[in-house]
Image (cartoon, rainbow, N blue to C red):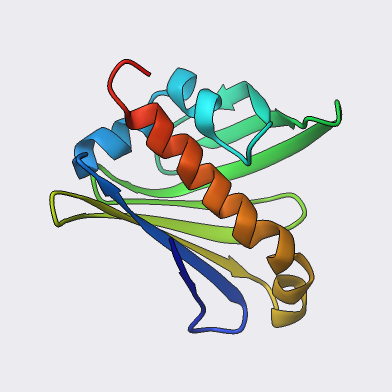
Length: 149
């Protein structure tokens, strides 16, 4: 995974997922049962209440941490371009806009996550948690994409 930041308000994480197409990666997002199995950092599980995978659709869920606590999340999908782009606004704290890109590259898919926060101070406050969490999330996605997973 490579993490870069062009804007002091953003965290940009990316990884090359070998041996899978953008369509396969997109389907791991589009199917709420699959998404619930891999979304979030290591040790987390999810309960989805609403998953309207369309522009303007809501995504309401709870991430259950290894500490036993529930972490409510509310997002709204803005853009969905099959096999290419997913954009959503995370509406509760920390508020950010997530742009997920998928591109075929070297026999796999380059996935990019661009998290844009309202200000650089918020980004700095949570970067130490978010950057490794993104890497763990990519690990979980990669495991979900393996055959027979």
